[in-house]
Structures are given as C-alpha cells and as structure tokens.
Amino acid sequence: MKQYFVLLGILFSIFGRVQAQEKIAFGTTTCQLCNMVIKDNRFAAQAENQNNQALYFDAIECLLDYKQANNKTDLKSMYVSDYANPGSLISARSAFYLKGDGIQSPMGANLSAFSSKEEAENFKTSEKDTVYTWQQLNEAFKNNAFASTAHNHQNHFRPDSHAPIGVMGDHLHHKGGLMVSLRYMDMMMDGNKTGTDKIDDAAIFQQYMVAPQNMTMQMYMLGVMYAPSNRLTISAMQNLIKNNMDLTAQMMMNGMTMKHDFSTASSGFGDLKLNALYGIFSHNINSLHLNAGISLPSGSIKERDDTPMMENAKLPYTMQLGSGTFDVTAGATYKELYTSFSWGSQFLAKFRTGKNTEGYRFGNQYQLNLWGAYRLFENVSLSGRALGTVTSDIIGGDPQLNPMMVTSADTENYGGEKIKLLGGVNVSFSQTSAFKNIRIGAEMGAPIYESYNGIQMNKNLSFVIGLKYSIL
Image (tube, rainbow, N blue to C red):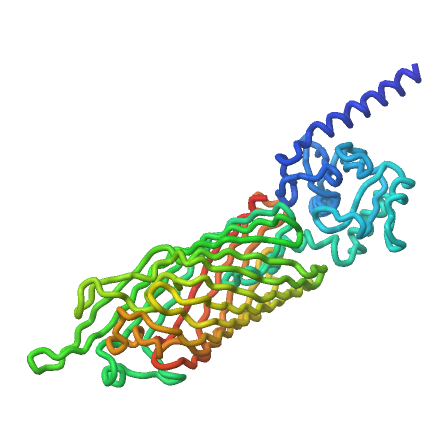
C-alpha cells in the first residue's frame, strides 16, 4: 500500500509538471508583472495562487518581484524553467539558481535555474558566478545582493524612472517591449523682442508693414517605441500641428495711416521622426544611451492663407508645418536613479541637410536638457527641468516671401539662444495595479533668457501633458 501511494504521488507530480509546461504559450502569453510577451522558454516561470489562478512570468526575477510585492499572497505552487532542458518546468523551491554574466536573462538579473547543483555549477563561466538555493535567492534578492541588475525591473515602475514628459528619447525598453504615447503641447508667444530687449509696434513699422502680436502653436504627438533587443529601442513620432497668429498691418489709405488687425492659420501633419536609442551601459544607479534619428519631410512648407494685402498669400517660415529637409539628430542621454531622487541630462544636435523645394533650410539646433525629480509619494514625483537651445540662421530664402512685409518673412529674424525653466509631475502605478502599464505626465514652463537674431516673437508659457501605455 505504501508503494502505491508513493507511485501515485510520483504520477501526480509528473502530471502536474506536464500541465505546467502546457499552460505557457510562448510568443502569446504575457508576464503577470511586466506584461511583456513570454518568448524565451529557458527563463519563463509560473505560479498558482490560492484562487487556483495561474500566473505567468517571463523571467525568474519577475516571479521574485511579484512575490515580494505581494508578500501577503500565499502562492500554492511555483515553477521555473530548467535552463539545461528548455521548455521543461521544475519546482522553484527545489531548483538551484545560477547568477552569472555568461547567461543573460530577459529582465537583466542574469538568473537561470537548474534541477541540480551540479548542473548549475557546470554552467559557470567565471569565478564570480554564484549558485543559490531558493531560500538563499530570496534573501539575496531582498537585500539587493544582485547590485546593478536585479532591481532594474522594479525601477521600471517608479514615476521618476522616465524623464519629464517634455523630454523625448529618454529611456530604453527591454527586449520585446512596446509602448504607445500620446502628448498634447500648447506653446504661446506674445509681443516681440530684438536681441534680449522688447520692441514695440512703432519700431517694427519703421521697417515692416506688419507686426506679429501673438501666436499659439498646438501640437498633438503620437509616438510608438519598440525594443528589438535589450540594448536597442527604436521609435517613430508623428505630429499634428495647429498654428494661429494674430497680426497688425499698418497701411496708407487716402493719405491716412490705418491699422488693420487680422489672423492667419495653418494646420496639418508635421515631419515624421524616426529615432534609435542604443544603450552603452545600464546599472542600478546610472545609465547611458546614445540618441540618433532622422526627420522625414512630410510636413507641408507651402501653407497659404488670406491677408489684407493678398488673398491666398504664402505664409512665413514660422507658420509652415515642416522643415522640407531631411534632418539628422545625434546625441546622448545620461540618468542616475537614487532611492527618492533622480536626475538626468540629454544633449541633442539637429543638423539640416541640403535645401528644401522652396530654396532654404532652417538652421541647425543644439539643445541641452538637465532635469531632477523627487518622489513625493510611491507613485508620484515632482520634476524640475532646465532647457537650453542654440539655433543657427536660416540659409537661403523662399522667393515667394517678401522680407519687408512682416518680421517672420525675413530670414534675418531667425536663430538665437534661449534658456527655459519647467516644472512637472509624473504619475505611475504599482506593479500589481490594473493600471500598471500606464504613465501620466504634465509639465509647464517659460523662458528666463532669450537672445534673438533680429526681431522675433517673445516666447511665453508652454504646457505639455501626455500619457504612455506599455502594451508589452
């Protein structure tokens, strides 16, 4: 009778193991913690809670993160992939775990599981590699013994692990990661400046017939990011732009000087931006990646509108929707992440190539972002950011624009230097929340220093709000 029960127990164990293996549909099932598609059968894990609900994970570290985040949850069973036998699951509690750089797991902890200590030892590639039991692994993970890699995954859910919402290309995704973002930006301009000083309409009318009064630029930005590998993330962003400008014209009528207020508008898609981010290094505290991209000239540079002087007049450069040229961007982003504080910096240079079909190209642009963020609550952070930009002059000119008509039609009135300060808030959700894949951010700011070439509109407030949704 005793032998019968032993045999029955073995059969149930084998049957349970086969069931566990069959439950994970690689390439389709998503991780319970990070929502990434489980693709690699060498690292996957699964568990069952007290409600008999099956939970799936793309890596051992995901299972450990989930277990620690749900310390009140009693998991009935836990299985991990046997690295030596891909596709086969073994009990997490009886497995032996190797941490070593020779085997790279999906979420960066470099953990692999084996059915025996001897097998784990055989896969060591250096003297620094360590073999753990389940109990030892839990203690090491809890005490951050894995230094730079084990908790990068937890940092992913921090509200300040991303830069303020107004910064693009600030973070990479893990292999297979896919994120969609939607941003709305509103920029307001009021009055005019020459160099660093304000200039009134009377001074402008001595040289031009029309003086800009105020302008608003609204932009809706749809972005997609995808990571074909842990080091490389690619992205695309398309903008929908709406420009509105109020102007005042001074004209002579019947020997009298008359002023006439009017408005012009343009709207449509801007240039399509394609970017690539390549990671140089990523540790628990700091990370560095390179930024590169190209802007495709999909935005119109032939926008027209009616004015008091001419119907269907060609609008000035600043009212056009694109650059008309292939623009190349290059730079780098560095970030540091501490317990309650984070900071980062990003330098980007945009180079214009050739001239567009209208005979000109915008000036090259160089920008430096510096930001810091403080975690006010677990899922809320406040940020401060300084943005400095240097823009070169326009090269060439559109022959259909009269440079004596309005300041914004004169190529001498483009380029300069600007420093802007912004404050913002970022909101994320915990790993166990139903909204864990969502991030929300908002930011507002204004220039504190402007030095323009010629006469240009005075930049005022800008506001941006956005939502990011991680699909995988």
